[in-house]
Image 1 (tube, rainbow, N blue to C red):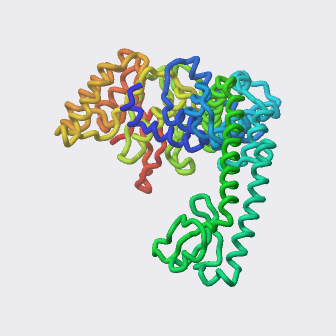
Image 2 (image 1 turned 120 degrees about the vertical axis):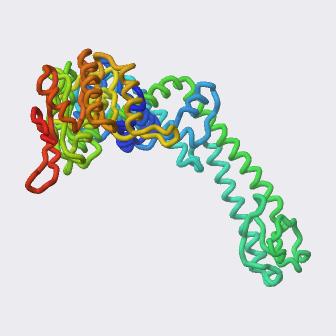
Image 3 (image 1 turned 180 degrees about the vertical axis):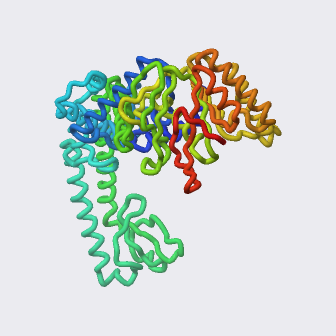
Length: 484
Protein backbone atom coordinates (compact mmCIF):
# COMPACT_ATOMS: atom_id res chain seq x y z
CA UNK A 1 0.00 0.00 0.00
CA UNK A 2 1.10 3.58 -0.63
CA UNK A 3 2.87 5.01 2.43
CA UNK A 4 1.35 8.44 1.83
CA UNK A 5 -2.09 7.16 2.77
CA UNK A 6 -0.83 5.10 5.70
CA UNK A 7 0.64 8.28 7.16
CA UNK A 8 -2.53 10.24 6.45
CA UNK A 9 -4.50 7.70 8.49
CA UNK A 10 -1.80 7.73 11.23
CA UNK A 11 -1.01 4.05 10.91
CA UNK A 12 2.55 4.85 11.98
CA UNK A 13 1.24 5.84 15.40
CA UNK A 14 -0.34 2.39 15.79
CA UNK A 15 3.06 0.86 14.99
CA UNK A 16 4.72 3.13 17.56
CA UNK A 17 2.27 2.08 20.25
CA UNK A 18 2.82 -1.62 19.57
CA UNK A 19 6.59 -1.08 19.67
CA UNK A 20 6.35 0.33 23.19
CA UNK A 21 5.37 -3.14 24.40
CA UNK A 22 8.45 -4.76 22.81
CA UNK A 23 11.49 -5.72 24.89
CA UNK A 24 13.93 -6.67 22.12
CA UNK A 25 15.49 -4.71 19.28
CA UNK A 26 14.17 -7.24 16.76
CA UNK A 27 10.64 -7.00 18.17
CA UNK A 28 10.70 -3.19 18.05
CA UNK A 29 11.96 -3.24 14.47
CA UNK A 30 9.15 -5.60 13.44
CA UNK A 31 6.57 -3.34 15.11
CA UNK A 32 7.92 -0.10 13.67
CA UNK A 33 8.16 -1.59 10.17
CA UNK A 34 4.76 -3.28 10.27
CA UNK A 35 2.89 -2.91 6.99
CA UNK A 36 -0.57 -3.99 5.80
CA UNK A 37 -0.63 -6.85 3.31
CA UNK A 38 -3.35 -8.21 1.01
CA UNK A 39 -2.55 -11.92 1.22
CA UNK A 40 -5.60 -13.41 2.95
CA UNK A 41 -3.81 -16.56 4.09
CA UNK A 42 -0.98 -14.60 5.71
CA UNK A 43 -3.35 -12.08 7.30
CA UNK A 44 -5.40 -14.86 8.91
CA UNK A 45 -2.17 -16.55 10.04
CA UNK A 46 -0.89 -13.37 11.73
CA UNK A 47 -4.26 -12.70 13.36
CA UNK A 48 -4.43 -16.27 14.67
CA UNK A 49 -0.88 -16.00 16.02
CA UNK A 50 -1.97 -12.93 17.97
CA UNK A 51 -5.05 -14.79 19.17
CA UNK A 52 -2.96 -17.73 20.45
CA UNK A 53 -0.54 -15.35 22.16
CA UNK A 54 -3.49 -13.75 23.97
CA UNK A 55 -4.64 -17.21 25.02
CA UNK A 56 -1.19 -17.97 26.46
CA UNK A 57 -1.08 -14.66 28.33
CA UNK A 58 -4.52 -15.28 29.86
CA UNK A 59 -3.51 -18.84 30.81
CA UNK A 60 0.05 -18.47 32.19
CA UNK A 61 0.93 -14.76 32.12
CA UNK A 62 3.31 -12.62 30.08
CA UNK A 63 5.89 -14.17 27.78
CA UNK A 64 9.20 -14.49 29.70
CA UNK A 65 11.17 -12.15 27.45
CA UNK A 66 13.53 -9.58 28.92
CA UNK A 67 15.86 -7.02 27.42
CA UNK A 68 17.97 -8.90 24.90
CA UNK A 69 20.82 -7.00 23.27
CA UNK A 70 21.35 -6.86 19.52
CA UNK A 71 23.14 -10.15 18.87
CA UNK A 72 23.52 -9.79 15.10
CA UNK A 73 27.24 -9.00 15.17
CA UNK A 74 27.93 -11.48 17.97
CA UNK A 75 26.36 -14.35 16.05
CA UNK A 76 28.22 -13.32 12.89
CA UNK A 77 31.47 -13.58 14.87
CA UNK A 78 30.53 -17.09 16.00
CA UNK A 79 29.71 -18.06 12.42
CA UNK A 80 33.20 -16.85 11.46
CA UNK A 81 34.83 -18.68 14.41
CA UNK A 82 35.84 -15.42 16.11
CA UNK A 83 36.24 -15.57 19.89
CA UNK A 84 33.85 -13.55 22.05
CA UNK A 85 34.53 -11.34 25.03
CA UNK A 86 32.87 -11.86 28.40
CA UNK A 87 29.96 -9.46 27.74
CA UNK A 88 29.11 -11.12 24.42
CA UNK A 89 29.21 -14.56 26.06
CA UNK A 90 26.87 -13.34 28.79
CA UNK A 91 24.49 -12.03 26.12
CA UNK A 92 24.46 -15.50 24.53
CA UNK A 93 23.78 -17.09 27.92
CA UNK A 94 20.84 -14.71 28.40
CA UNK A 95 19.56 -15.76 24.96
CA UNK A 96 19.80 -19.44 25.97
CA UNK A 97 18.06 -18.77 29.28
CA UNK A 98 15.25 -16.85 27.57
CA UNK A 99 14.82 -19.69 25.07
CA UNK A 100 14.63 -22.27 27.85
CA UNK A 101 12.11 -20.17 29.77
CA UNK A 102 9.94 -19.76 26.67
CA UNK A 103 9.96 -23.52 26.07
CA UNK A 104 8.93 -24.15 29.69
CA UNK A 105 6.36 -21.35 29.45
CA UNK A 106 4.66 -23.20 26.60
CA UNK A 107 4.89 -26.57 28.35
CA UNK A 108 3.36 -25.12 31.52
CA UNK A 109 0.40 -23.79 29.57
CA UNK A 110 -0.57 -27.36 28.57
CA UNK A 111 -2.08 -25.85 25.42
CA UNK A 112 -1.90 -27.32 21.92
CA UNK A 113 -1.43 -24.38 19.60
CA UNK A 114 -1.71 -24.59 15.84
CA UNK A 115 0.14 -21.44 14.78
CA UNK A 116 2.76 -20.75 17.46
CA UNK A 117 3.68 -24.40 18.03
CA UNK A 118 6.28 -24.51 15.24
CA UNK A 119 7.99 -21.40 16.62
CA UNK A 120 8.33 -22.99 20.05
CA UNK A 121 9.65 -26.15 18.41
CA UNK A 122 12.29 -24.08 16.63
CA UNK A 123 13.80 -22.69 19.84
CA UNK A 124 17.22 -24.09 20.82
CA UNK A 125 17.97 -24.81 24.46
CA UNK A 126 21.22 -25.99 26.05
CA UNK A 127 20.94 -25.94 29.83
CA UNK A 128 24.47 -27.22 30.49
CA UNK A 129 26.09 -24.59 28.31
CA UNK A 130 23.85 -21.85 29.69
CA UNK A 131 24.75 -22.76 33.29
CA UNK A 132 28.41 -23.11 32.43
CA UNK A 133 28.62 -19.57 31.04
CA UNK A 134 26.72 -18.07 33.97
CA UNK A 135 28.85 -19.96 36.50
CA UNK A 136 32.10 -18.76 34.90
CA UNK A 137 31.17 -15.17 33.97
CA UNK A 138 29.76 -13.31 36.97
CA UNK A 139 29.61 -10.02 35.06
CA UNK A 140 31.24 -8.59 31.96
CA UNK A 141 34.14 -7.43 34.17
CA UNK A 142 34.32 -10.36 36.55
CA UNK A 143 35.27 -13.99 35.91
CA UNK A 144 34.64 -16.46 38.74
CA UNK A 145 37.71 -17.65 40.72
CA UNK A 146 36.71 -21.26 40.19
CA UNK A 147 36.50 -20.92 36.41
CA UNK A 148 39.69 -22.99 36.32
CA UNK A 149 42.22 -24.35 38.84
CA UNK A 150 44.96 -22.21 37.26
CA UNK A 151 42.91 -19.03 37.55
CA UNK A 152 42.14 -19.83 41.17
CA UNK A 153 45.86 -20.41 41.87
CA UNK A 154 46.95 -17.19 40.15
CA UNK A 155 44.43 -15.12 42.09
CA UNK A 156 45.32 -16.77 45.39
CA UNK A 157 49.01 -16.04 44.81
CA UNK A 158 48.20 -12.48 43.79
CA UNK A 159 46.38 -11.88 47.07
CA UNK A 160 49.33 -13.23 49.02
CA UNK A 161 51.82 -11.02 47.16
CA UNK A 162 49.54 -7.98 47.48
CA UNK A 163 49.32 -8.61 51.21
CA UNK A 164 53.10 -8.83 51.48
CA UNK A 165 53.58 -5.60 49.50
CA UNK A 166 51.08 -3.73 51.64
CA UNK A 167 52.71 -5.00 54.84
CA UNK A 168 56.09 -3.77 53.60
CA UNK A 169 54.77 -0.37 52.56
CA UNK A 170 52.83 0.05 55.82
CA UNK A 171 56.06 -0.43 57.71
CA UNK A 172 57.47 2.56 55.80
CA UNK A 173 54.32 4.62 56.25
CA UNK A 174 54.29 4.11 60.00
CA UNK A 175 58.01 4.41 60.49
CA UNK A 176 59.09 7.44 62.52
CA UNK A 177 62.13 7.69 60.24
CA UNK A 178 60.08 8.13 57.07
CA UNK A 179 56.71 9.57 58.09
CA UNK A 180 57.96 13.18 57.86
CA UNK A 181 58.83 12.63 54.17
CA UNK A 182 55.32 11.47 53.21
CA UNK A 183 52.59 13.68 51.78
CA UNK A 184 49.83 11.25 52.86
CA UNK A 185 49.76 8.14 54.96
CA UNK A 186 48.29 5.99 52.16
CA UNK A 187 49.23 3.28 49.67
CA UNK A 188 48.22 3.86 46.08
CA UNK A 189 48.84 2.45 42.57
CA UNK A 190 50.61 4.02 39.61
CA UNK A 191 51.45 2.17 36.37
CA UNK A 192 50.15 -1.06 37.95
CA UNK A 193 52.74 -0.74 40.73
CA UNK A 194 52.10 -0.16 44.44
CA UNK A 195 53.62 3.19 45.47
CA UNK A 196 53.57 5.74 48.29
CA UNK A 197 53.16 9.56 48.05
CA UNK A 198 56.32 11.45 49.00
CA UNK A 199 56.88 15.21 49.34
CA UNK A 200 58.87 16.40 46.36
CA UNK A 201 61.59 17.99 48.46
CA UNK A 202 62.27 14.65 50.21
CA UNK A 203 62.19 12.35 47.19
CA UNK A 204 65.89 11.59 47.54
CA UNK A 205 65.34 10.32 51.06
CA UNK A 206 63.47 7.21 49.94
CA UNK A 207 65.27 4.84 47.62
CA UNK A 208 63.09 3.68 44.78
CA UNK A 209 61.54 4.51 41.41
CA UNK A 210 59.37 7.55 40.71
CA UNK A 211 56.28 6.58 38.70
CA UNK A 212 54.26 9.79 38.74
CA UNK A 213 54.07 13.39 39.96
CA UNK A 214 51.00 15.26 41.18
CA UNK A 215 49.59 18.06 39.02
CA UNK A 216 50.89 20.63 41.49
CA UNK A 217 54.34 19.05 41.48
CA UNK A 218 54.40 18.88 45.26
CA UNK A 219 54.01 15.09 45.43
CA UNK A 220 55.92 12.27 43.77
CA UNK A 221 54.79 8.65 43.79
CA UNK A 222 57.67 6.35 44.64
CA UNK A 223 57.94 2.58 44.46
CA UNK A 224 60.38 1.72 47.27
CA UNK A 225 63.12 -0.61 46.12
CA UNK A 226 62.14 -3.05 48.87
CA UNK A 227 58.89 -3.91 47.03
CA UNK A 228 60.28 -3.80 43.48
CA UNK A 229 60.65 -7.56 43.06
CA UNK A 230 57.27 -8.24 44.65
CA UNK A 231 55.60 -5.75 42.28
CA UNK A 232 57.26 -7.55 39.38
CA UNK A 233 55.95 -10.87 40.64
CA UNK A 234 52.47 -9.39 41.04
CA UNK A 235 52.47 -8.01 37.48
CA UNK A 236 53.62 -11.35 36.11
CA UNK A 237 50.80 -13.06 37.97
CA UNK A 238 48.34 -10.50 36.51
CA UNK A 239 49.61 -11.33 33.02
CA UNK A 240 49.18 -15.04 33.73
CA UNK A 241 45.66 -14.34 35.04
CA UNK A 242 44.73 -12.37 31.91
CA UNK A 243 46.07 -15.12 29.65
CA UNK A 244 44.09 -17.74 31.57
CA UNK A 245 40.91 -15.66 31.34
CA UNK A 246 41.47 -15.28 27.61
CA UNK A 247 41.91 -19.06 27.33
CA UNK A 248 38.68 -19.65 29.28
CA UNK A 249 36.71 -17.25 27.07
CA UNK A 250 38.13 -18.86 23.96
CA UNK A 251 37.11 -22.29 25.26
CA UNK A 252 33.55 -21.07 25.87
CA UNK A 253 33.45 -19.44 22.43
CA UNK A 254 34.66 -22.65 20.79
CA UNK A 255 31.73 -24.49 22.36
CA UNK A 256 29.38 -22.02 20.65
CA UNK A 257 30.85 -22.22 17.15
CA UNK A 258 29.00 -25.44 16.14
CA UNK A 259 25.61 -24.10 17.27
CA UNK A 260 25.78 -20.62 15.71
CA UNK A 261 22.93 -21.50 13.30
CA UNK A 262 20.76 -22.64 16.22
CA UNK A 263 21.54 -19.42 18.06
CA UNK A 264 20.66 -17.26 15.07
CA UNK A 265 17.33 -19.06 14.59
CA UNK A 266 16.55 -18.80 18.29
CA UNK A 267 17.45 -15.11 18.34
CA UNK A 268 15.11 -14.42 15.42
CA UNK A 269 12.32 -16.50 16.98
CA UNK A 270 12.59 -14.69 20.31
CA UNK A 271 12.31 -11.39 18.41
CA UNK A 272 9.22 -12.77 16.67
CA UNK A 273 7.71 -13.94 19.97
CA UNK A 274 8.38 -10.48 21.41
CA UNK A 275 6.57 -8.87 18.48
CA UNK A 276 3.60 -11.26 18.53
CA UNK A 277 3.18 -11.07 22.31
CA UNK A 278 3.40 -7.26 22.13
CA UNK A 279 0.55 -7.24 19.60
CA UNK A 280 -1.39 -9.46 22.01
CA UNK A 281 -0.74 -7.26 25.07
CA UNK A 282 -1.60 -4.17 23.04
CA UNK A 283 -4.93 -5.79 22.12
CA UNK A 284 -5.67 -6.93 25.67
CA UNK A 285 -4.91 -3.56 27.23
CA UNK A 286 -7.16 -1.74 24.74
CA UNK A 287 -10.04 -4.25 24.64
CA UNK A 288 -9.57 -5.09 20.96
CA UNK A 289 -11.27 -8.03 19.28
CA UNK A 290 -10.37 -10.49 16.57
CA UNK A 291 -11.52 -9.27 13.13
CA UNK A 292 -13.15 -11.65 10.70
CA UNK A 293 -12.05 -11.59 7.06
CA UNK A 294 -14.98 -11.25 4.67
CA UNK A 295 -16.02 -9.74 1.35
CA UNK A 296 -17.51 -6.70 3.05
CA UNK A 297 -16.95 -4.26 5.91
CA UNK A 298 -19.16 -4.72 8.94
CA UNK A 299 -17.83 -2.81 11.95
CA UNK A 300 -19.79 -2.95 15.18
CA UNK A 301 -19.13 -0.42 17.93
CA UNK A 302 -15.92 0.56 16.17
CA UNK A 303 -13.69 3.05 17.96
CA UNK A 304 -10.86 5.20 16.66
CA UNK A 305 -7.80 3.54 18.25
CA UNK A 306 -5.93 6.80 18.86
CA UNK A 307 -8.72 8.41 20.86
CA UNK A 308 -9.19 7.61 24.55
CA UNK A 309 -11.47 4.58 24.66
CA UNK A 310 -13.44 6.14 27.53
CA UNK A 311 -14.17 9.26 25.48
CA UNK A 312 -14.54 8.07 21.89
CA UNK A 313 -18.06 7.46 20.57
CA UNK A 314 -18.38 4.00 18.90
CA UNK A 315 -19.89 3.72 15.43
CA UNK A 316 -21.56 0.95 13.45
CA UNK A 317 -20.81 0.95 9.74
CA UNK A 318 -21.34 -1.54 6.93
CA UNK A 319 -20.23 -1.55 3.29
CA UNK A 320 -20.17 -4.10 0.49
CA UNK A 321 -23.40 -6.03 0.95
CA UNK A 322 -25.89 -3.80 -0.84
CA UNK A 323 -24.15 -0.48 -0.27
CA UNK A 324 -20.80 0.42 -1.83
CA UNK A 325 -20.81 4.19 -1.39
CA UNK A 326 -21.62 5.95 1.88
CA UNK A 327 -22.17 9.72 1.93
CA UNK A 328 -21.79 11.29 5.37
CA UNK A 329 -23.07 14.74 6.27
CA UNK A 330 -23.05 16.70 9.47
CA UNK A 331 -21.61 19.76 11.21
CA UNK A 332 -17.94 20.61 11.27
CA UNK A 333 -16.07 18.92 14.17
CA UNK A 334 -19.05 16.57 14.39
CA UNK A 335 -17.10 13.37 13.80
CA UNK A 336 -17.22 12.93 10.01
CA UNK A 337 -13.45 12.88 9.54
CA UNK A 338 -12.99 10.65 12.58
CA UNK A 339 -15.42 8.19 10.99
CA UNK A 340 -13.33 8.09 7.79
CA UNK A 341 -10.12 7.57 9.73
CA UNK A 342 -11.69 4.93 11.96
CA UNK A 343 -12.78 2.78 9.03
CA UNK A 344 -9.48 3.20 7.19
CA UNK A 345 -7.31 2.60 10.24
CA UNK A 346 -9.20 -0.49 11.40
CA UNK A 347 -8.88 -2.04 7.94
CA UNK A 348 -5.15 -1.27 7.94
CA UNK A 349 -4.78 -2.81 11.39
CA UNK A 350 -6.59 -5.99 10.43
CA UNK A 351 -4.54 -6.32 7.23
CA UNK A 352 -1.42 -6.05 9.42
CA UNK A 353 -2.45 -8.97 11.60
CA UNK A 354 -3.69 -6.80 14.48
CA UNK A 355 -6.86 -7.04 16.47
CA UNK A 356 -9.19 -4.04 16.13
CA UNK A 357 -11.15 -1.76 18.49
CA UNK A 358 -14.59 -3.07 17.60
CA UNK A 359 -17.12 -5.51 19.01
CA UNK A 360 -16.52 -9.20 18.43
CA UNK A 361 -17.96 -10.40 15.15
CA UNK A 362 -16.84 -7.33 13.22
CA UNK A 363 -15.44 -8.07 9.80
CA UNK A 364 -13.26 -6.34 7.22
CA UNK A 365 -12.56 -6.86 3.54
CA UNK A 366 -8.98 -7.16 2.29
CA UNK A 367 -8.10 -4.21 0.06
CA UNK A 368 -5.24 -3.82 -2.37
CA UNK A 369 -5.07 -0.13 -1.46
CA UNK A 370 -6.73 2.24 0.96
CA UNK A 371 -6.82 5.81 -0.37
CA UNK A 372 -7.47 8.80 1.85
CA UNK A 373 -7.98 12.38 0.73
CA UNK A 374 -8.41 13.86 4.17
CA UNK A 375 -7.66 17.40 5.32
CA UNK A 376 -6.01 20.34 3.63
CA UNK A 377 -2.71 19.45 2.00
CA UNK A 378 -2.06 22.92 0.58
CA UNK A 379 1.62 23.37 -0.32
CA UNK A 380 3.04 26.89 0.01
CA UNK A 381 6.23 25.88 -1.84
CA UNK A 382 4.25 24.68 -4.87
CA UNK A 383 1.66 27.45 -4.56
CA UNK A 384 -1.20 24.97 -4.68
CA UNK A 385 -4.66 26.04 -3.56
CA UNK A 386 -6.70 23.83 -1.26
CA UNK A 387 -8.85 22.75 -4.18
CA UNK A 388 -5.82 22.02 -6.37
CA UNK A 389 -4.30 19.97 -3.58
CA UNK A 390 -7.43 17.83 -3.35
CA UNK A 391 -7.58 17.45 -7.13
CA UNK A 392 -3.96 16.28 -7.20
CA UNK A 393 -4.87 13.55 -4.73
CA UNK A 394 -8.03 12.64 -6.61
CA UNK A 395 -6.12 12.29 -9.89
CA UNK A 396 -3.67 9.91 -8.24
CA UNK A 397 -6.54 7.87 -6.85
CA UNK A 398 -8.30 7.78 -10.25
CA UNK A 399 -5.10 6.49 -11.85
CA UNK A 400 -4.57 3.78 -9.24
CA UNK A 401 -7.85 2.55 -7.74
CA UNK A 402 -9.34 -0.85 -8.55
CA UNK A 403 -12.48 -2.77 -7.77
CA UNK A 404 -10.65 -3.91 -4.63
CA UNK A 405 -9.89 -0.47 -3.19
CA UNK A 406 -11.24 1.47 -0.22
CA UNK A 407 -11.55 5.19 -0.96
CA UNK A 408 -12.00 7.75 1.82
CA UNK A 409 -12.82 11.31 0.73
CA UNK A 410 -13.19 14.22 3.14
CA UNK A 411 -15.29 17.24 2.06
CA UNK A 412 -15.52 15.96 -1.50
CA UNK A 413 -15.73 18.77 -4.06
CA UNK A 414 -15.05 21.56 -1.59
CA UNK A 415 -12.85 24.56 -2.28
CA UNK A 416 -14.53 25.63 -5.55
CA UNK A 417 -17.87 26.85 -6.88
CA UNK A 418 -20.62 24.88 -5.03
CA UNK A 419 -22.46 23.77 -8.17
CA UNK A 420 -19.29 22.77 -9.99
CA UNK A 421 -17.97 21.10 -6.83
CA UNK A 422 -21.16 19.08 -6.38
CA UNK A 423 -21.19 17.96 -10.01
CA UNK A 424 -17.54 16.99 -9.86
CA UNK A 425 -18.13 15.06 -6.63
CA UNK A 426 -21.07 13.13 -8.11
CA UNK A 427 -19.04 12.30 -11.21
CA UNK A 428 -16.19 10.96 -9.05
CA UNK A 429 -18.53 8.86 -6.91
CA UNK A 430 -20.09 7.39 -10.07
CA UNK A 431 -16.62 6.51 -11.38
CA UNK A 432 -15.63 4.75 -8.15
CA UNK A 433 -19.00 2.98 -7.97
CA UNK A 434 -18.65 1.75 -11.56
CA UNK A 435 -15.93 -0.61 -10.35
CA UNK A 436 -17.78 -1.40 -7.13
CA UNK A 437 -14.97 0.18 -5.09
CA UNK A 438 -15.85 0.78 -1.45
CA UNK A 439 -16.18 4.55 -0.98
CA UNK A 440 -16.97 6.75 2.01
CA UNK A 441 -17.25 10.48 1.40
CA UNK A 442 -18.11 13.41 3.66
CA UNK A 443 -19.84 16.46 2.19
CA UNK A 444 -22.00 19.48 2.83
CA UNK A 445 -23.53 19.44 -0.68
CA UNK A 446 -27.27 18.80 -0.87
CA UNK A 447 -26.92 17.54 -4.45
CA UNK A 448 -24.74 14.63 -3.33
CA UNK A 449 -27.17 13.69 -0.57
CA UNK A 450 -30.05 13.72 -3.04
CA UNK A 451 -28.05 11.61 -5.48
CA UNK A 452 -27.40 9.01 -2.76
CA UNK A 453 -31.13 8.83 -1.99
CA UNK A 454 -32.09 8.01 -5.57
CA UNK A 455 -29.33 5.60 -6.61
CA UNK A 456 -28.86 1.97 -5.73
CA UNK A 457 -25.60 1.08 -4.05
CA UNK A 458 -25.45 4.50 -2.37
CA UNK A 459 -26.48 5.33 1.17
CA UNK A 460 -26.65 8.48 3.25
CA UNK A 461 -25.44 8.81 6.81
CA UNK A 462 -25.00 11.70 9.19
CA UNK A 463 -23.22 12.66 12.36
CA UNK A 464 -25.89 13.46 14.93
CA UNK A 465 -26.20 16.98 16.32
CA UNK A 466 -27.85 17.77 19.65
CA UNK A 467 -30.12 20.69 18.70
CA UNK A 468 -31.17 21.32 22.30
CA UNK A 469 -27.63 21.71 23.60
CA UNK A 470 -26.20 22.90 20.26
CA UNK A 471 -23.33 20.44 20.18
CA UNK A 472 -22.44 17.29 18.21
CA UNK A 473 -22.96 13.87 19.77
CA UNK A 474 -20.49 12.18 17.34
CA UNK A 475 -22.98 9.34 16.78
CA UNK A 476 -23.18 8.02 13.21
CA UNK A 477 -26.73 7.59 11.91
CA UNK A 478 -26.95 5.35 8.83
CA UNK A 479 -29.70 6.14 6.30
CA UNK A 480 -30.35 9.62 7.66
CA UNK A 481 -28.83 12.62 5.84
CA UNK A 482 -28.40 15.93 7.62
CA UNK A 483 -30.63 18.75 6.39
CA UNK A 484 -27.65 21.07 6.31
